[in-house]
Length: 153
Image (tube, rainbow, N blue to C red; front, side, top):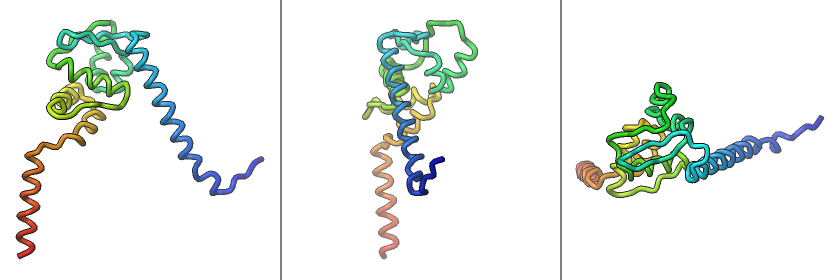
């Protein structure tokens, strides 16, 4: 029987967490490759006339909208989604399969609204962290200055 000193086991949890993170990235990367090459995909989503291939299980795990939808409609292999732009949905699909969303400026609001429609909680959190309107900065600065002036005099 091997006995480890306490300080030898301290980093064990961190190592396992890193291994788990690596494995998650590995799996997502392979699922994304499968999606991009149309391997093992089981759903085609038509958004603004554009066809996106994906895996139902991955979509359902990432979106309360898809989770609910696929529980009700299990046999369909082609589904049209109305009210979303191709651009916004493409960004969100990329986020679903990579955990990364490359969006800024005017597109940010469009993608955030699509994420809210699809009930993609993790995407909403990420997008809202980036979403700062200039008017919010201006009013925030104004309140700060007014409070500072009142306390200074």
